[in-house]
Length: 350
Image (cartoon, rainbow, N blue to C red; front, side):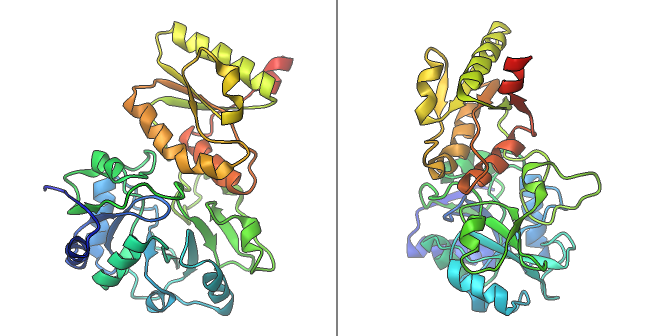
């Protein structure tokens, strides 16, 4: 199959919308990352998402709709959820809501809930309106790899496996949406994103964060949301996170860098703008500002993909405090590293 790379003209959006309505796969831009879309009510089309990505069938999908009204046939929306949607939707927020029978089990891995999102990206919204169908869309990448934030990332991973990719430029947020489970008594963040727990407290009396956000799923524990699998968002090279006081982190990374280089490995350090001077002489990549974690969120996946393109064997990354958007960044970094974290302070005191 030849994959079309489309500019977002009205004519091309109509072409992509017809493909969705006909049960084909389309790559579409959103404000978070690019999605691999299929008609959520067409079971065969949804199954083709899993086949194209190599995605496990027990990993549920997010259903994208252009409005709250379009979500009504798919799920039960209580007053509390409507309040959240009125405040944050359209936007980078996904709500887990009790599903209605019309939603095929393949979409939500047989769970009683369905994940609903109303994107704010104008191209995504227009495509959803033109298609006339709810669109199930995980990130448009090979399963386990860093999520795509440009159309080229999608093409590199999935060319030949989908009808078309609508090129909407670089994604604004750069990390997937926040997933909020509204089926619980206390609304629970299952996957952090650009909408932080503190922001949610503007319209909810209380919000909790699932303890699985910064740890792997335990044996027998089901993924209730996308992004909860053990290793996810991972580069080809071995990524390790290094935490601790700045001096100790820099010292440990320098030692590990030298050891890896002596073994013939190509090494890269992922560091914050404020700390670049501590890695002078090393292959170091700026991942954004410690003072502005949203810049780290924006660049993270593109940085990991660039490391793959450069053939980096080993990566060492600094870490953010898991607060605000930093929680979302650390959720992605931890999973990209397979939860491999080194404590530089312990090393210094050993």
